View (tube, rainbow, N blue to C red):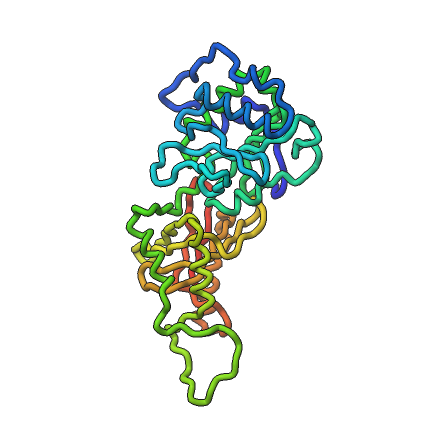
Length: 352
């Protein structure tokens, strides 16, 4: 099923992925069409502004950002943000802030040819998906007066039939409300990485590697002087520190990756990934230069998904066996673990 799509009815999509909360028997009832003033919008900018105003004025997504949808200048895109996370407020600088987005919104002018699911174009939300820790990824696609919702995971996409949300506004408003009542995990957020804020104990710890290491050496190829001592096993390359500093620069989000190991939990602190596989489907392999909170050293963390089958051997286990056999030119494994974030889904984390 990799790289495949499944189309389902709009209402069925909401019932499956965004069910009513257990303590609610029916959603709030609206008496007027919130999108009645949006019918004249055609250009992307006009569609986005009309949509934003309707969501904000009628409070269609309670618990989300007050402005509902944020636009940025690269394209006419937006996203829903949480308004109840004090350390991670919604953006106000016209920038996308991909890691903070809960559910993105893609706006197009009102022509069917602009619908990525009707013209054969690649609709993969690559930029957003590769900058956040996700199990799945939801996207609203608004094309004029038509809307469809897509859900991406590691096997492919599930997408709804498009509906005219001006005419079927009750169904659309109920779906928006259901989305706002979902937890971050229901909306695709991976619960295993811990997002750290400036008030988190581990947040300032990540600034320590920015300092010069006492045994730091230049990684550039050069001839060694006869009296130059051999590098210490604990030496650190300049380039490694530079990569880590780059990963947490410019306000990049900071995470603590927890890896169970020998009865304890080891914390590896990371920023943006140094390597990211493209797209949402597949193993979603990523590599991070990480700060080991236990040893104070910079290490490499490889994070990837795999099918949870008994016959599939853990990559970390393979590397460990090669290390034990003293096979040369193989990364040294510090620890590894399969982390199950939701039922039936597993992610491998190996630290070198």
